[in-house]
Length: 346
Image 1: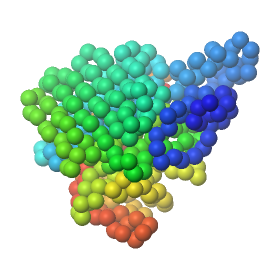
Image 2: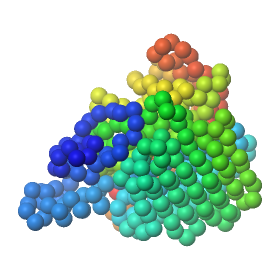
Image 3: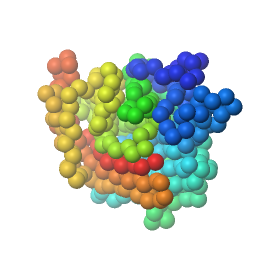
Image 4: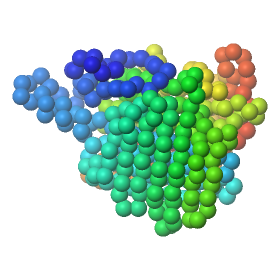
């Protein structure tokens, strides 16, 4: 019995948890797809289940870390018929971008854990190796990266992400349109320690001044998936560790992944509107007024038979204020994070 699907072939639990699930077994849930009728046919049930898990389930772990000098982001992900990984960094003083993107067919060189709470994720191909170890039930992570950038420069990283024992992580399972499902584990506000070296230049990260985010997602995605997403972690003007996660459109469910963290304590964000025009993004509501100034950006495009993929990440500085339900106002002054524009046919 898994954490989400208690009996194979039944719908998963729709809910919210303050920790990563050890076995978010979305793979065992039925979905609507071209071969779903085989799920009830003797001798063909296993073939349908294998096809569904291999070619309809998408999964990834995306992480970021921000220091006073550098923003770094990386991912290991798979869509069954192909795997995707990248690492990029933006030097905040100059906006200089260092990047390496890679796609491999049929998940060659890729191992992705079923969860962010244990084991790990690996991606390895020429010019890019990313290894993520899931530690302490998904409350900590170890990361090692070895890459050659687009400009053929060396790019290595050795990082540790840690959250406090009382920090409130966020996991949700929600329905998607068309009889699909999504599970995600997110947290914004890790202390990050380690170093990043790019083209011989070394950046040191200390947990008192470097902060990280995690997004582990597995979903039976819609054939055409489109969203905009914001994530950040850093310090407020008054020295509080603040994190933010917001996605648009938000799935129609009683639970939401839209949240703000203050010193590890989470609060839902309701009725927030995202305004996105080119690279000028903002969030507004009765309690949120945050604008965004771009620093650097990266993009990835794939146009192949039956598959089209466009992703753009704009790294920038968020300024404004967030008022929590307690009435406290938290001022942001150029807290660095990302704005993602995602459009995929998979």
